[in-house]
Image 1 (cartoon, rainbow over the protein chains, first blue to last red):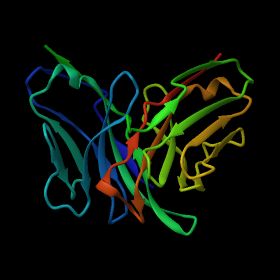
Image 2: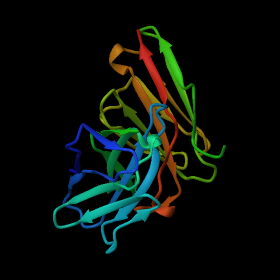
Image 3: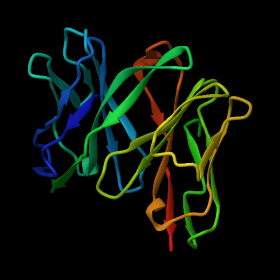
Image 4: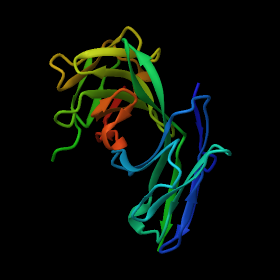
Length: 120
Length: 118
């Protein structure tokens, strides 16, 4: 079974500073994918960044980067130059292979989330 | 707007009533998922459709829950005889996928449908 752990219920950061949100995972699969989503108070889950288990380089998307340490099974999200609009809930999720109906697909398992508050 | 859309966004219902949520995925996406999210928790998987076929259902999906995707496009999630424990946000997601992977490695979520059972 897959498990995602986010140990920081809440994080605070000053505007324009960088912040790291922690995520560790547990899986016996060799091939998997790691996602980070942002969920503002409106409820929508906004895709931020993806890292494949075989990707050798850390993923980056604008101000977001994923610090992937495979041996430690961690996939921390780094947000550089925080903005007030970054205040939201952030979820780490892992996609694992599931066999169903004669085919396979990737099912997401989410962590508990971290509430990020950016102070002016 | 070409994203995943869900309707209604909010629903308040009395215990014992039936409710139905609709999800319109991104056009051409063959994969559609329903998740449930309670306050303070991450989303939990409910069910998966590949085109019109419902290929997996979570044990969270009791027999009061039924989901359909009749033409492989939009999907509905119906909850019969609602209970207070059904109060949650129901999230729909879609992707274009083949085998294990999604195109662009992206799974898109809608804004969710909030259900409150009183």
